[in-house]
Amino acid sequence: MKRICVLAGDGIGPEVTECAVRVVGEATDQVEFVRAEIGQGALSAKGDALPEETFALMRSCDSSLFGAVTSPDRLDYVSPVLRFRKGLDLYANVRPVRSLVERPNRPPIDVVIVRENTEGMYTQNEVFDDLGVTTMRKVTRRACERIVDFAIDLTRSSGRRRITCVHKANVLRGSDGLFLSVFRERVGMLGKGLESSDQLVDSAALKLVTDPATFDVIVTLNLYGDILSDVAAGVAGGLGFAPSGNIGPKHSVFEPAHGSAPDIAGKGVANPTAAILAGAMMLRHIGLPGPASRIDQAVAATYASGHLTVDIGGRHGSQSFTDHVLRHL
Ligand code: ATP
Image (cartoon, rainbow, N blue to C red):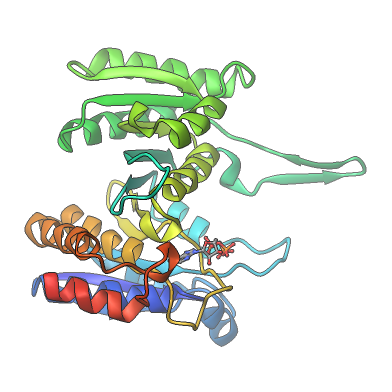
């Protein structure tokens, strides 16, 4: 039996996480769920958005399923997401985006974005002076090596063939230059049989929109991966379509790529697809590929049979969409 720590969080987090828990629980009897607090609820009840008992539970479980948190607009606030990514050494953020519905004037997309998850612009290391603010951006050789190795492994193990390094090494010659040269080195050593290329982040953003078939697997730095995965999700239909996994040597946390969406929270209309597919990614990661594939197929079949969510012009809210996924399951 695998233990899963469920962290619903804020905004639409609880709404979509509940849908994912229903579907995962129906797909397999090999998991049990334990719940923990994170985000604004935890901050008001315990004075910490990521209380120690939550963190301890995440460490002791086989994996975690996370919803979303809302971050208050305070300079001294460190997001619990950044804290658990760092604290659990979740160095790889994997964001697959695949079209599930045909959309007028939008090409189909099927891409996996592998994003470095521990450094870059996301260290919240900002120095204030009279002139303004300097943000420190860290790119280490070790982080580049492990994310590139991870992406090469993932490309092979998922039956994909092409890997593209996305960077801005023509301007950030030192830091992005290091990332690009590590990519070339590691692909030379480990990427036998794979096609490899590199692309500047600005033109990659354009290509993702105009010709997404250019890409199969993208490996990139933290900020670029965050932005490009939202672009890719937009091509597929919106943020409700992009699941993600934060993966490290010992621990993992799966979540929808979207945030807490305060504008639609409490209305029951959030698209739970990203959260449900994150549940499938989690099952695959913890060694339950059969139930994972059944969930992927049930979600695809739900869309194929014309049951669409509100965000792409359908009539289904979170729960009624999930009812259809369960029927297909
Ligand atoms: P946060 O600050 O927590 O990141 P946000 O609103 O800035 O929240 P998102 O939560 O990612 O960022 O939402 C961006 C937009 O996408 C919002 O208009 C939101 O309603 C929409 N959106 C996000 N997730 C979903 C979803 N699952 N279903 C439908 N729309 C969504």
